[in-house]
Image 1 (tube, one colour):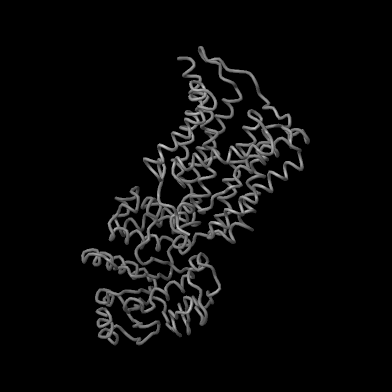
Image 2 (image 1 turned 120 degrees about the vertical axis):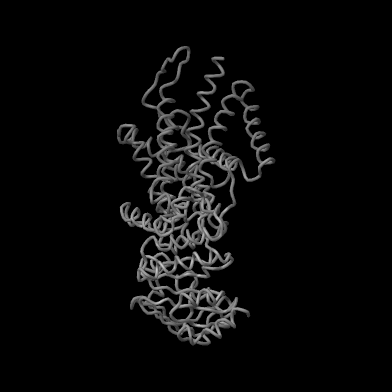
Length: 230
Length: 288
């Protein structure tokens, strides 16, 4: 579904990604692990199109999306839940979620919202509350639902457990499992490798802007857990 | 007592006009982060376009107002699409660009129509008597249209997909775009709506007040003052501040006199900004 070849990203004179190649097949949940500064978020930002690349290709469902704008990549089917949630703070929870379903039409928007409220009841109980007033875990659910409201076949989750209490890590993990059951393909970055490894089918370990190791969860578990402490 | 109520009615009427102007101004700032110095120019353009249609082509005034609204909206849309959008992240550049557009517009009107105020009359005159009060019909018509336009803007912003998308883009452009919202489609539309509101106000109000190439200067100053008072980028704040300014202007001109009235307004703004530097309903300004 997603194929990245020899991707290069530079910020001025600093190289953030150096010849990164990864592959995500349909229905998989692939984990990118690595310490701070490993290049995980740069890779996600390059995929969604907010960071310009200076080499390599990004192919999504066979199409080179490297030249597409950020919004066109989303319309092509790339869902995105950002690091730090970044909900729209003054907008209500319902408006946050529905903003991800722009242009779907009222009927499909309502269907999406009903489905998401059924999956995550907190969305219904807090529907009219400004998203900025929610706790971190609740905001993560909102960001997650916003990304899913257009039914994307592919979802990018950037550090979904960042700064969350264990109870919320469990709830977010359950939410990710629900989306997995729908057949959504997921590429997830996470510094907290332990809970993320329980959700992934394969993984890549990044360090210094490069992929150092890849393989099944069993194959990368030890090095991924070691990276967690770096 | 009669004087007090009459001044209040004038204040509400003035406030509605100011609200319509300030809404457009604050929409552009709140959504795009652009201070639109050309806003007064669109007010003038709306007045002159309506005047041109009525006086030179014999178009009925109501149609002329609609055409002026659409024309100014279209100019605003194209201006954003081809010029502002390219430099939208550079606040100083957009400031200079909109100032340049304002000077171009007011000079263009000066060249085309001359410096004198043309004869542009509101098509309805007379007054409506309610009890002891005589209300000018033209003011009632303008007030009604302004209130209708304000309600439409609110519905557009808070009850439609378009408004939701604009509010999302105003909050976090990058994340909103990553959710599939298209700034290059939505920003020009928002700019067009805001400029159309200024054009509508110009077409409605200039036949009552005055039409001249430079009547946009005080309009820009008042819009700026209202938006700062209400809180930059706040739609609700701008509306409330507009009515507040309208009432203060009306009451102070009746009870204090012209120049003292203007002074009262600036003193009020000064006090509000000392107490609340971000305005009555201010919020954090979107970053570049």
